[in-house]
Length: 326
Ligand code: XMP
Image (cartoon, rainbow, N blue to C red):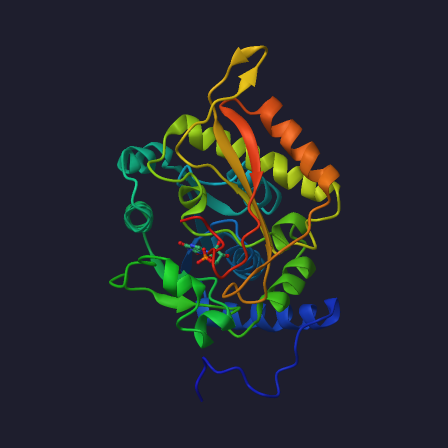
């Protein structure tokens, strides 16, 4: 039997009861597979790796070692949430690595998008590898592979993410959600008691804010982007748009325009709002955001975020615009 093939008889997990049955079955299977050995997991805080972590914690507790690498390109509050949920609430064996300086130093002066992606992907592997080699007695590597990753070999993750984990790592793989679709992973995440905003989080690219701080990343512009993005997300949440729009974020280009602030000339970067709907990210349409919400977002970003003096809304569908700006 091909274990990477979803059996036709497998019921789509749509209810808490079905999720519970899946969890019970997986906990048993994971215990049988892992025994008393140790498992390593790169925990990004995204839905898939979070659900895998929660399943493994339930199954083998402290035999799971989670490594969260903060590449300095996370959205506001994300690494903190990983520490809070997994390190504190679930009592996971969590290694937190703040590698911000390593990533930002390597990225300094690099403007070319694919080069930036390569650096981020490559450095991620290095940091993870270094942490893994400090650990003893690890036999398994857990991954948040989901069914679309298997069936769409030309899918988004495969296409964009340079690298992946080192191929020469001699671990046996543990992939408990590899036959699930995203919506099922979410139902399982809910049933495992993970926070709603973690389980229903919008997709976020592996290279994170690195592909939204356009051109060569600088720390001040990255910080402005992170703050502006947090305001956008907060206002979308408040105005009931978070569940309606598939992906929404800010990009900040590396040029300034003239503005006025406190009666003085104020040169700043523009914050570009992107808010799109799609089913497969291959094409995307523009969501109609009510003007009052756009006004509020603009007022808050220009008032609260140092360095930003304009907010613009990108109305370009895909094609011709890609979802990300780079
Ligand atoms: P584009 O910009 O190609 O994006 O229309 C389509 C979807 O892919 C996401 N994306 C990425 N995801 N690593 C990822 O894991 C990446 O390097 C990457 N680049 C784009 C993007 O956010 C959108 O959902």
